[in-house]
Length: 228
Image (tube, rainbow, N blue to C red; front, side, top):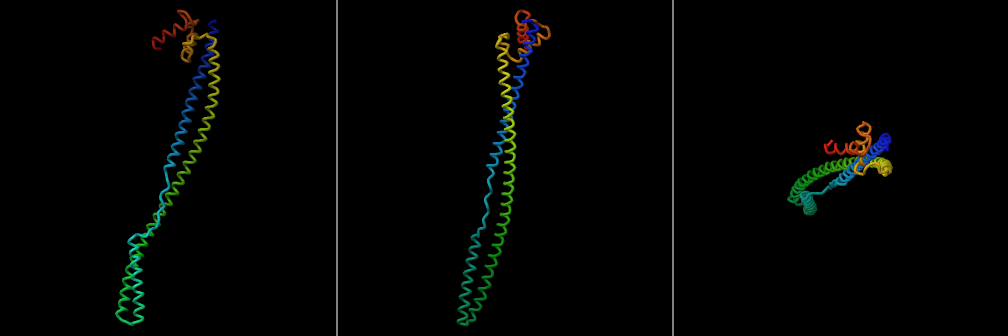
């Protein structure tokens, strides 16, 4: 081949090698983006699944209040019996007992009501906190769901783009193999860096052939040994 033909040939190879290199970089970058989208989606799913709803509070009467209620009920039964007995016997001492019983019952009953009010107040406040936490958790899950949908759309777009890049890369590799199949370039030098260097030598006039003492291969080997 003449020097002009070699320049044209290597110019075409360099161009195709450049396309292959660029498409490979795009393919790797797009694949990394897809992997990042998948990691983000999985992280959001895991975070959302780990956030369980809090336990709903329940109103329960304490043991102390149950005792107070029992005593209050028992005292009232005794008072009722004493009232009936006084109505039958007209005994004044029984009337005094009734009055004392009513006072005792009132003390236990008021204590029971006070503690019960406190328990109900605590239950209402706890229930409000529970409902607020449930609302907050629901909003967080909705936001996470929206983010997951958005990431899925971006992932699908990246996958479609990667398919296009892959098609172009397959075509470029096929063209490159076809151009190398003419066996003009020695197999050792069939890569982007080597053919670019040889093309530069030819264009710069440093050589006019590939083989020989002053050929492109010899210059290239010398620069490889000199770590250039």
